[in-house]
Structures are given as C-alpha cells and as structure tokens.
Length: 317
Image (cartoon, rainbow, N blue to C red; front, side, top):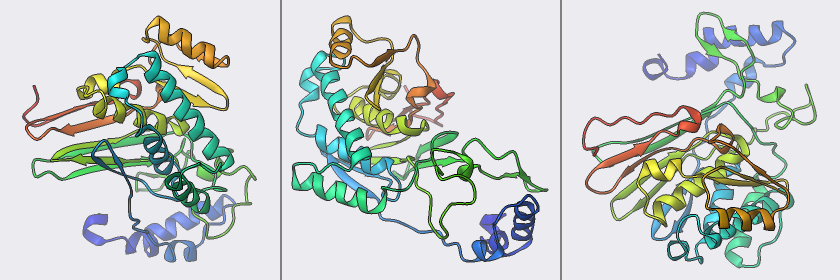
C-alpha cells in the first residue's frame, strides 16, 4: 500500500487520523502536526577502511555504527590473523578494544590520535545525550546476483500493546523504556529524534561483499565487530564466523560465551575479575544475520542465538 500510494496517506490521511485518535484517547500527546511535519532523513553512511574492506555503517545520531567504526580503527594496527582466533593475544586485544570503546561511549574520552579524535568528536556532537534503544530488534541482510547488497535493522522496542485498528500496525514503546527516556513520561523534548544502537553494515573489497547486522541492544556493536573480524581477519566461512563464541564488555564486566580454550579463558578472567561465564550460546550476545559474496558464490548464516535463518536460490555449497 505504501509502495503504491506513497507516505502521504499515512502521515496525513485516514491512518494519521486513526493514529492520533488512538494516542490522544489514552492521554498521549501525538498530534496531526507531528505527523505532517515528520521527514525521513537520508544520511551519508559512516565509512571506515578495514584490511582493505570499505565498511559502511549507520552514522550518527545512531550510536552503534560510530562505536563499531571506533573499534575497527583501534583494531586496524593489530595483527589478529597472525595471532589466530581464540588465542590469548586475540581475545585480550578484543577485550581491550571493547573496554576502551565502552569508555569512549560513556565518558567521551579524547583518543590520542587525530583520527580517533575526529571520530569521537563526531560521536559526541551528534549522539551523546541521546539515550539508546535497547531491545526487541530484527535484522535482515541480503545480496543479489547483480551485486546489490542491503542491510536493514528495525525495532518496535517491546511494543506498546496497542495496534492501529484495521492496519496490523503496532505502536512502539520507545518513550516508555527507561534506558531510552530516563526522565520519565511526558518529558521528552519536542522535535528531538531518539538515538539507537542499531547498525546495519555493508563491507566491500575487490568484488567481495558482506551484509551484516544484529539485534541485541548494547551487545549488537560487539557482535557485529567480532563477526566482521572473524570473516575478514580469520577468513572464516559465514556459518563459523557467526557461531564462534563471543565476549562483551559493559560497565566494568566481561561476559564470556562457552567454547574458548582454557588458557585464553583463564587469561581473560585474570584480567577482568568482574566477569560472567555463560554455559551456552545466548541471545544476550546479539544475532548477526550475515550474507556474503566471494566473487563466485553466496554464503551466509542466520544467527541461531536469535532464531536466524539463511536462504539462497542457488550457488551455495
């Protein structure tokens, strides 16, 4: 319907009337002017070069893409391929980068290099002060035979429990989430767009393509980062790159999935006394639904942590 009629009926027609009535009948403040004045903004992707890959991700005011770009820049000088996946050096480096990315996100630290300063200046100017959306997220990645790729992430939060009559449209609950709107109900400033951690990402190098994204709140940035590293640095097939055990650093605690070698696990636990060991793969660590094109064939993986699936019409081994 939107494809054939355009967005005008939604923002100014019968659906708009229905949406405003539904909200105002229950004490909400959404108005016809809010809908009529809303504009979709097309933004230029944030781009970073990583091991020869042109990585394009979600720019500010989204937080996730900027933080992934920060982490990739920090990892660029590290020879992870030589270290090998799951080694003490690999995991210590990864945890260190995550910890510093977390500090940058929370405190807006000034990184030492000019490149880092420019990246974080962009982040602080456009993102800080915007609370982050934190759950209920879906991601779709696709690549076609013509070499077109797309990554789409969307979220209704946890949903408000309200459906727009006769439409199947569910209203989100973003302003009801404490992390997103810490000042409470009826205090969101007018005409301010909410931030998000969502970071659909595309990468290309010499005809090779990657489309990737994830749900998982704060953890999606580390999930995407680790899967990209697995694909690019360790040259893993997509299913192995997605399924490999992950770590995540947040608020001085390191979370660790099972499957790491004992020496690496012991080293991480020694470096991060505040840690939590998980006994199975878990949706806590995101769900990096991923597709790849290596110049000859397609491959991909839906992350089992979040019920992902992968399908291809032809060319999969």
